[in-house]
Structures are given as C-alpha cells and as structure tokens.
Image (cartoon, rainbow, N blue to C red; front, side):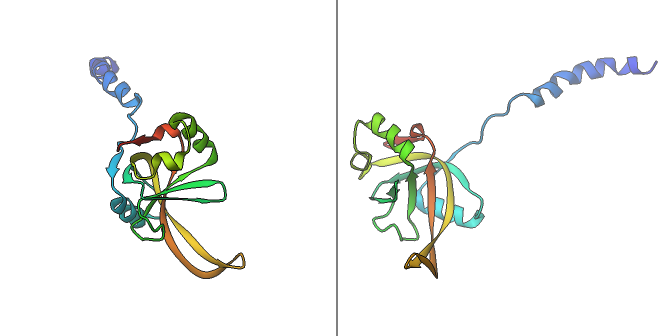
Length: 151
C-alpha cells in the first residue's frame, strides 16, 4: 500500500505539527509615554492599545468612587493620559503602599500595564448631555500588581 511510503514523512512532520499546538506566549507590551498612548489610542479607536504606560503623576482627582491619576496637571489637556483606579484596586494599593494612594503616587513616575482607550466625555447641563463633548484617554488599572513605581 502506498500509505506506508508516507509513514517516515508523517513521523518527521509530527513534532512540527505538535509544536504549533503548544501554548503561545502572551502579547508583548510596548512601553509608551502619554503622548504616544493618546495618539495611538485615537488612531485605532474604539479598539484599545495594549502596552506598559510610563508617566509622571502630575495630578489626581476623584469622581464618584474612582481615583484618577493624570499625566498632565489639567485632565482636559488632549495630551493627558488618565489611569482609572476602581475602589477594589485602590484598597489593594492602600495595603501595598501602606496608606493614601493619592499622596503616595502624586509626583511619582509610574508604569502601568494595561489597555488605553479613547473615551468620550459629555458636558452636561442639569444632568443631561449638552451636545458638547471632548475625548480623554483612559487606562483602567485591573490589578494593583500592574502598577509599578519608578517607571
């Protein structure tokens, strides 16, 4: 039978085929500075840009229960990259940093692994959208371990 003549070839190809099924490494995270992150996120919106975002924390703010770390003193600056910290992650950072997260990070250089997205911010009048808006670039911090101090 002719199939027997293919047996050596099939046995030789088996390791190559099996190696293709092996677990592939995760995505390589590019180190980006705020202006690069903002530009890249705008180019691919609404998709995210994955990377390690390296920035100095120049301002902080709060809205509802979230903490925001900003790369610019004015969060409305188009070049501003904003790290969004949820209450759960903030509690983990309090434990890790030993106290107030805002005080610990303001003025520090940080690196955050995650995904930057362009987010539309609507101006409101009496709680209703006014029709005016602008865009910010946000990275939601998913785990306290994804933030390092010192860049």
